[in-house]
Length: 148
Image (cartoon, rainbow, N blue to C red; front, side):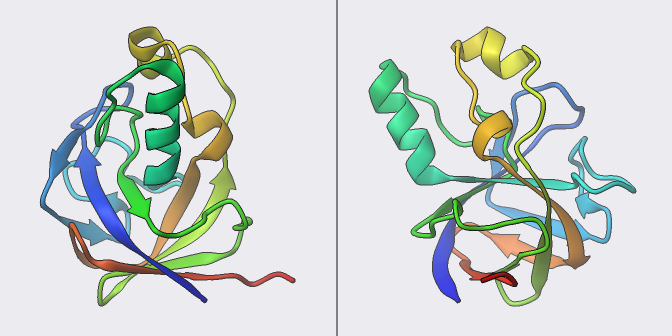
């Protein structure tokens, strides 16, 4: 089990938009309340490593912040690259997410058109909610790997 923390939480009312940072969010069985990706499917919440954003900023002379790669949760201090489908993240006191998909088809969306680069198709953890609760910026994040 490895540990990190929530750097930021971001939402948008519809899919295909950059997200705006919020200090706290309620997670239901369908995803984050008031986020366009919540619903009855596997890609309810998207997680990304804050270190990847910092690296992309440095390499591409950008100043991308929370939500601008269209992620819901930026996680710092935790290497997400070892996670596979089926692994889990526990966030805060109650929220448990299961990795449903890693990366996705890279079709030029709002992020690529706006920034010229994207991270989610390569590094994004698309998760489904196992257990809901409330998330706050700074909450602890623990990874549970179910593979060798």
